[in-house]
Image (cartoon, rainbow, N blue to C red; front, side, top):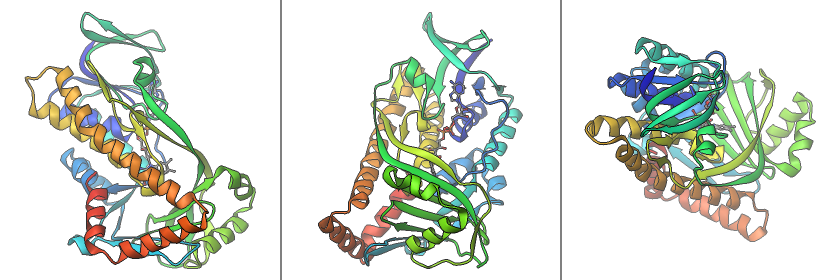
Length: 378
Ligand SMILES: Cc1cc2nc3c(=O)[nH]c(=O)nc-3n(C[C@H](O)[C@H](O)[C@H](O)COP(=O)(O)OP(=O)(O)OC[C@H]3O[C@@H](n4cnc5c(N)ncnc54)[C@H](O)[C@@H]3O)c2cc1C
């Protein structure tokens, strides 16, 4: 069977690009090694640009009803007095984005892919890619071979497409692991994302409804064992201390999970008829909650370019995509690196500087507005 485009990876990024291209009339197939839609329980922040893209695909209204809008982001240095607040009001909006359950997003996307008659190959793993008379032939782990005009790798941080096509990358460990869990609160929660820069690493609490929140605590490797060994009650006591006593009466409603954190950027996102996008192309620290958003930005860029230049060769479209998205993602990676190093450092002069910077930025509305616009339109 031949396809115009095959996408590897039914994550949110892969499903979105598949849906956008299928809606344009391209013959699309998507392959994933998992047996069924993963129904991930994770909650992620989705910015304005991403929700507008999902709306253009026709899935946003369904997702929106179960999501939590947030109108402010507050961040402070637990070890000092600096704090900064970004508010939707300052840019004339009702909210800055939404907290969405990844599984809901995946379900609605997969349902729409089926409506568009996209062929979905579950439980199949990509194992090889070959050039076949100018087209791309992929081999799956059950021996099946499929030909396509163009291949998109949205197969996550350990991308096989990236590996098989020898995309050059820069990658390093952040020497941190993210402890993630869901927490119930007895107090009613407001729609504010809060982040405390603690001596262990950044601790973010994202409300997912009026009674529950998601915790993402990026903890330095040297402290991870101490925190992970704590029973839930003691862990929450530590969390309250480090957060700054602003929340009370908490209880875990999920297990705690730990993810190693690393940085990765490919040095180009396209080679001929093959391109990579989402975490396959770039992976940044979760402290600004922008990884999925920048992956959806990649998907939107590809969908728009295919629509704008129907007569252009696929190689030229994918080259244009890489030229468009590489600088944006390198800029994001650099910003995350400055944040990570600035806040990870316990040097007294750096601590003083970051507190001064927080206070200065908090008083500079223009700088804050620019920052918010960038973070919501990535
Ligand atoms: C703790 C944490 C919190 C985060 N919070 C946020 C947030 O609030 N907001 C935000 O924007 N981002 C956030 N991120 C980043 C975000 O989770 C990722 O950027 C995003 O989920 C990547 O999506 P993706 O579709 O590119 O990849 P994935 O979701 O990893 O999907 C890849 C898919 O490819 C499939 N696959 C892999 N290899 C193969 C193969 N060989 N053959 C077939 N299939 C294959 C996999 O089964 C999977 O379904 C966070 C990340 C972490 C670690």
